[in-house]
Amino acid sequence: MLNRGFSLEPPETPSRKNATGWLLLALSSLVIGGLFTLLIVMSRTPGIQDIFPWVDFFHTALVVHVDLTVLVWFLSFAGVLWSLNGSGRHTPWMRAALWLCVAGTLTITAAPFLGAGNPLMNNYVPVLQDPVFFFGLGLFGAGFTALVLHGLLFSRPVGKQITGTGALRFGMLTALAIALLAILALAASWSGMPDSVTGKSYYELLFWGAGHTIQFTHVQLMLVVWLWLATISGALPNLSPRVALLLFALGALPALLTPGIYLAYEVGSANHILGLTWLMQYGGGLAALPMGAIIVWTALQSGKPPETCRAERTALLFSILLFGVGGIIGFLISGSNVTIPAHYHGSIVAVTLAYMGITYHILPWLGFRKPLGRIVALQPAIYGSGQLMHVLGLAWSGGYGVQRKTAGSAQGLESIQKIAGMGIMGLGGLIAIVGGILFLVIVFRAMWPRGQQQEQ
Image (cartoon, rainbow, N blue to C red; front, top):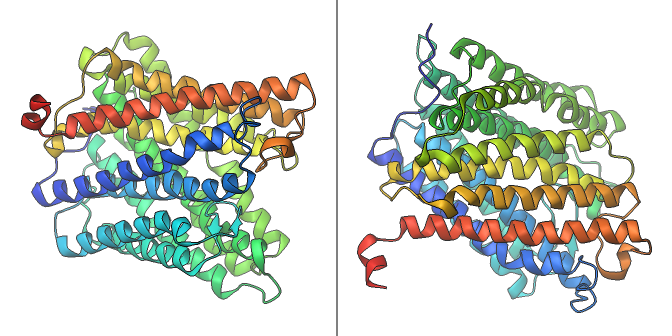
């Protein structure tokens, strides 16, 4: 069958309103989380770290920053994509899911200012040991669960004939199924938790299975966006919808083994922990590697993108680059040093860049203006270049033994190699902050009512 492109159809009014709500929540999480970013970067940058020696603040801010800019941002943007693919039925259900997530996000944000402390820097969902924080986390989790169940029941069908649109819908459906598995993994970890596990180890183990599984959801949605961005930016890959669908199935396959690990091994056992780790380590890029290679090859052959889609093309290519770099670094991890955050920063930023690019495209669908201009085209390159420096700086420093989740003198920057690596990390982080701020300014200006904007 002739490939007419990989893209979704503009949503109907109920789905459009749902998508707008989730987009506003996703953007708000970046704004709030971004307020902590500058202080976090400064607390680890040589020279500046001595002026801002807030080690205790570093850990508390890092908890809120990670939960907002990773957990809330990614899961809320998943809500955007699933809403665009929604049938528009049972809108009150979707609205309830959104407002639960909004309430949870606000509670998490307010928790430190209400006395919440005792940060635990466990993986995936770091926590503040405080009832207010956990209440907010529970609200958000309930909202996300409602979102996933709604998507599984009321998404648009893939269709009997496999088209480019149908392939993307299948990719979104696999992401929903994997998200449900992640929720069930969280419940299974909680119910099967050994009584002897407490403190940081408890939350590390609690979120280990769900955290590893939900990564497959993020990757599947990123692949959906890659194909979509490639199509709209004039780099339609030489890939049939049927093959694309098979790649989505291949990408989802490792995640489907998660229940088997829970059935075969006790929660917290070495086999349980390693099994989940290996699934993500060796299965996370099964579909991304061939799909990314095909898209890059096509983009190199297709020449310049249309003027109106330059930002989308740039975001696409930087997303593929960062995902590849993050994957390579993942195989270099040895010990608990900053090579680990270099790995997951690369993967996280790849998803974020894809979401940035598709945001520019869908804004007109949601009733807003299409961002255009030179700054818009440069924004993904600024953000992507800064994050690439940030990731490579961390990887370099990790090779010299700089420990993760430390700040100030605790980093032990006694050699020129360590100082140089963390200096590159800091500079890249600052450049990425500029790129992130540009993205938010561009999007909010496009969303601002035209009449009010002209009056200013």
